Image (cartoon, rainbow, N blue to C red; front, top):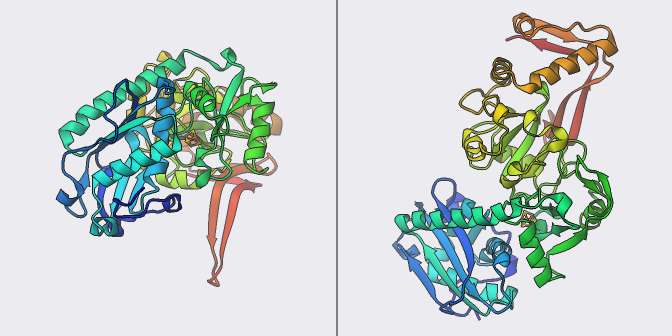
Length: 471
Ligand code: SF4
């Protein structure tokens, strides 16, 4: 079946990583542009594979090129609603090809071709042909298929305009429903190949972490293949409407995670947040010093206020882990009225990248839009605190109330104004027995004797006394 393909094609290559030292070229990714799209059509030229732009043999080693993958399919039982779910499989199926690596989804794709694949004579037609065979194998309801691969910059730009429209149409449709309108949610375990304890719970208000699959997509997928990786969950008993806790969801989580995770709050980063695979578009992270939540997306290249970039944070909370204070999420979920509703929604957001803020501006409550800083306004905790105070962010009121409550309970800490706090060279906080001062999803302690590394997972650090020193 794959006899014309000069490299092996098999699920066994799915975990293959192509590092830069072994990379022939990179396609799309953070330093270029690219996207993938599946479209159900009335007419398809079955078996056609077309490359528009330079092929691999015309590319220069070590360079990065724009890249678009358009897959057109036809079949009597194919519905438009299946496009998102079929498209999501592009990631997995591309990775069956030895020497071709595909990461992420939609307009976030990031691909690499290895030097070995190039030496073996691998061309983009081979990618197209492999995908045609694999998609038909995976989805027997696909009767006809054609694949177009774009590498010409102008063509990729035009393709991107089309893909954005298609993604927006899919997402907008899902926005018309909310969790209360339905009796079933859906689970997806497609990412268990690399995140074995992860199950995405997809509800009308909570699009999957990858941002590529919404409730409608899941409904169509579960109908098409009830035994497949996307399945129905009867909504059942609501345990906590605000946090988004459901008895049946907990049961499914426990079952699919082999007992590792048995409770999940769909709308909170605290307590039992949703597990995170690795495909999430963004991460919500708790900033304990200000009792607020920051958001960082995978396109943001700088450091977050926690002093680490997205990649490091993603590494700490991905792989199917449930890490209190962190939650992988889709950008579409940030458009939902239920977005982290148990934590205060946008009232609790105290930092996010400018690009995200601009793209979500119609969904951020008007009275809060100017009060949430981006990297252009503030980066350190001190700068963020100053910005929040000057712009009267509601978190300041929350901090004051919490401080007053602590003072009342302990009877030993007087409420001080923020100006006093800034002026204070050193402050000691006592009186609250064993205050939690830090939370670290993973903390590595190097050993002085060598040869041994001690790793604390989900470490909570408690202190009898906290000393805050002004630098
Ligand atoms: S991120 Fe979630 S919904 Fe998307 S493919 Fe992975 S498990 Fe499925």
